[in-house]
Image (cartoon, rainbow, N blue to C red):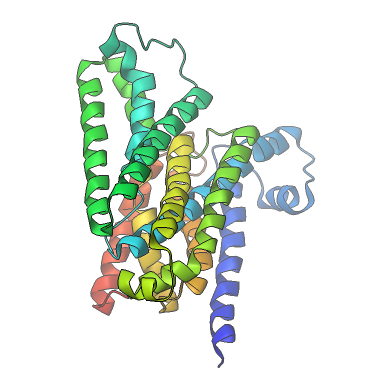
Length: 343
């Protein structure tokens, strides 16, 4: 079997599974809607029951699209991170970009308790939270980029990124200590992660951010393949390491920072999906891995969201907890079973 055909079949199967998971995710929720009406809404845009149509088009479909974007963005961010640092434990939170987004949200929600009214904005909405989180992730990304221009060693940059994450976590801890119980609870709820709070306009903005990050990741495929054999090998192929590192870090910042800003911090996906994808396709070629992690990350996120919804119940479990509870044992089982990590 030739190489293109070898990977074409798994890709087609993944895409089919993605469509099934997308439709299945939309069909479940606190309000019971017949599966036939869900199919009519998705494929034909026609539902006779107006309340059902409103629920599907204004709540369930945006949430399913959010899950698709979040899963794809985090998975690709994790793949870029692991390849750049040649570290299988690297993930979207390593450079502190997601922690910066958390710090922005913490300052908005809990800042007034510490600064005696200086940061008392008086309103915390989905939009203001997204703006604050985006600013936090952007500032940390800017700091990382500044350091990247001074540091030649990629591993040193990784350690510095971890230090940025520690600093932001420390600031959040100080804010948590001085804030009142109501504000602290609000921040804790945000940290659980949520896929169902975005309007169509916010979803469009998140789509644009993920799209730009994805295009930058696709543009870096040749560089990523060269980096697998080390920086010296990549340099011998004529790769401009400084420029390439900037592009990859910006891509990771957009993907991880954008997701955290709009959906909150979500664990497991960025770390584990690249490993699961390598196990399935048994390759390190990023021409295969990049599109594969995009699809596979979306599938995993949709499945986790489906479990979190508690069908026919008004309760929704924290998506951040579900991704870890369901995902971590699967990764452990696969690695123990194979006894070798493809990297």
